[in-house]
Length: 307
Length: 248
Image (cartoon, rainbow over the protein chains, first blue to last red):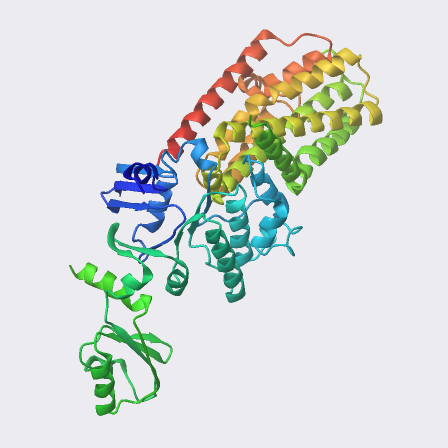
């Protein structure tokens, strides 16, 4: 490929030193720079308040950066021509008032010059049964699926999914991600944020980790997972085990209690297991999981925080 | 270029209005009910402002119904759309905000035309109000066009941040300017202090134009200018506040 053609292929999203300061000097986004290429699925991960939603808001032109620059499809997100080529599922969008499901979707279809067919949208969002229901009467997960259909109404090239699966049950989530995969196969560019790390792991071909508004890791899921050797030991605590007992264990991070189910993360789970056996702790149903995105994510965020 | 979007948005707005129970109660039922009660109490043929009471009060109640749809429906819907994040969604879509605002105005105008026709049919067919067709037309057009400043007022109230407050304030303003504007009880029934307050209110100026036309007179220039003045103030205020809220 000649360099000429290479340079002509512009990234879908380009952030340059993007910064957002709120009143009071709090920096939600801090000199963030990255580009997203066409046809990729990128997951933006980070703990609560890391600046993910603010970043998405600025890419979409809903908030103005304090400093830095956003380019979306080579132009400004305020540009109507750019907006006609994108779709977004935002957080905190309740629903459309006073309209039925198919009316709401059809309304949005009319805003675009080449909309997706209504039937296809209903099918992709799994809302065929609910098409004649009032949008306001839908369950939380169904409302998210309606938002998905409305985001797709204009057959966008770029799709933003900000915490799309919140409120969806397991079945809905499966159907939803299947639709997203189908869109990716069609060559759409997808940017998503999610709390469910396994979703990002299975779906994204690139993960960008943000903490305190800064980029702390960027790579394929495999690359991100390779940044840590941490694994987790998970077990059910017997009645005799107290949190204090676990503090004497060597080289572990904080124990996470979920009912009586306990999770310990450590760079050396072998030593940890031997120590648990030696101390004769009251535990059963031991599992070792490792090399997952969750361990990598936690290590990244913790080491960054300690810096 | 944006005709499809505008038409779709207008259709959706009108569907929403017709599905709203509050709209039927406040903009159709109440004016109609008041009309029959107060013409029953006072008597149809009492002379007032150069015409009979049943014609005069038909104008009052039509104006009252149109005010309801322009102020309360518009403001509560705008507030709800902002609170639910719907406006954010529109700002990501290629629908220009001018088309969105225009669709609100056009659909409210269409609903208001419906209210006017409904009330006039009620007065003409049930109460036997008789006027020349020119007078009917003039009264109808005046009330129709005169609702514009009150749509601007509705938009202004809809910009208040607190959604619960929007409904309360819209109701208070609506009832307040209706009573003080002489739509419920005519000016002649009030004392001189109230009459002076009344003359400064846009609702009175709106009503007085309709009463003049029903009596076969022209709308006074003073009323027209005051109403236009209010329209400008409401529009400037609401577009200023809207800009300020969007610039986050």
